[in-house]
Image (cartoon, rainbow, N blue to C red; front, side):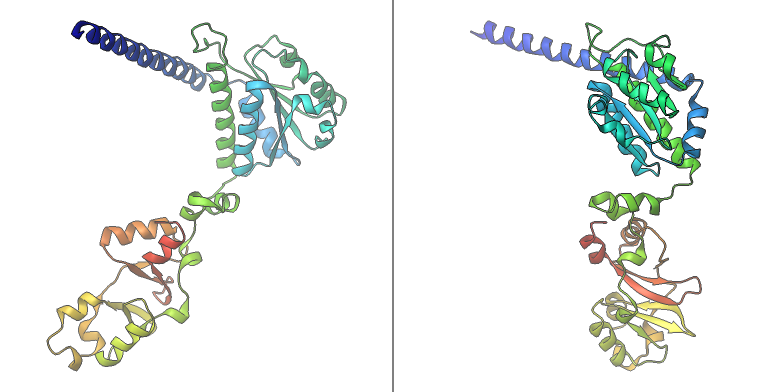
Amino acid sequence: MPITRFSAASGASDAAEATLSTARRVLQTEADALVTLSRALPADFLSVVSLILEAKGRVIFSGVGKSGHIARKIAATFSSTGTPSYFVHAGEASHGDLGTITEADICIALSNSGETPELSDLIAHTRRFSIPLVAITSRGDSTLSSAADYLLLLPPAPEACIIGMAPTTSTTLALALGDALAISLMERRGFLPEHFRTFHPGGKLGARLARVSQIMRGPEFLPLVAPDQPMTETILVMTEKGVGVAGLVEDGRLTGIITDGDLRRHMDGLMTMTAKDVATRNPLTADPTMLAAEAVAAMNARKVHMMFVVDEGKRPLGVLHIHDCLRAGVA
């Protein structure tokens, strides 16, 4: 019995190692192909970027099978980074969806072999109406390549599967090339985080791209006191505004902050003091245009739970509390 258990364990170990070896081989095969692509981008790459930047319509992606899935994802990436795009299934195009493609648009067709029969009607449509056609394919002598105005030729690379037939390396290359196009366009357009948030308003990503001004509590919540204000009144202000602090303001500028910690440090004779006697000078503040995620990082680094939001002249505009950030999904 002990020998049998040892053999089973040994067999399981061999199978596990073989599986890990396969995974490493697949990743290395695809990684090598990506390096090859990065070192020799298709000759028409810059021309396609310029074409899209000058387009008055949308970028229409099309394909079937695995290429269709990749085309759909690239279209989504384009749209979310500032280049209006749409996916049209090549099979559906022949049954009415060609009507979504206008003469102002650009078509990018994906087919590893370049011989996908379902693309024939779409190709004919682009030729008939002089719609620019870009091909992403692995074969430069294919029907798709010959018909296209621009060719984004993928480098020769083996598929990662053991029989060399399952679309693996080829789809990875097409997807990566689509990402390269999308980000190149994004940077050429000067696409900023606030633009990105416009297209990603929901979820964690949208929250992390929010600005301080979108989350902060406004002027009505500002707990402000004058330098000579008695601490008896200052404590009332701290309590009434509900943020547990008071801001010291001199000539309209925030010059200090009074927290619970400051109260404890000045406990002896506290009620005979004024706000300026207790305040900590040069407090941590936030700019209203700062990303809320950056403000949270600053609060965490200083181990504080709130910040005053001020303008360039240090005039208080509002307060940002860590709880507000938590509710908004930032922290």
